[in-house]
Amino acid sequence: MIQPARLLIVDDEDAIIRLLTQFLTSRGYLVCWADRAVTCLAALDEFPDIRVVLLDLGVGGTELLRLLKVKRPDIDVIMMTGQGEEGLARRSITLGAFDHLPKPLDLSILERLVRACID
Image (cartoon, rainbow, N blue to C red; front, top):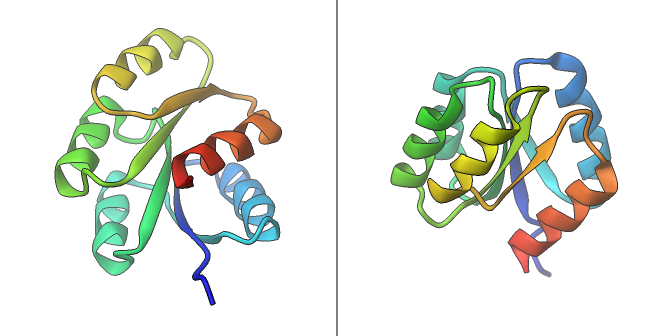
């Protein structure tokens, strides 16, 4: 049996974490989450099977993205951005992010991006 892909949600908004956890688990993914940069980095050690990180730019910014890619260059990072952060999010792609999504999130686009990362 093939093990479902594990995703890490990194956001400081509980409502976003709950929404994404419910949505992604209903699609068959294993989900863990972190609400701060330090717990995000710890989760990478705790769950070595993480394949994709959904990272809110407001939690650690591009510095956390850089640390993630140094620690685990094999993972894909999808940046989630609030209003006014899209330019920074686009620049984060040059730092190794797979793509970015503006908030409010379009879950169908998110699902396609996650699938693209895993495939």
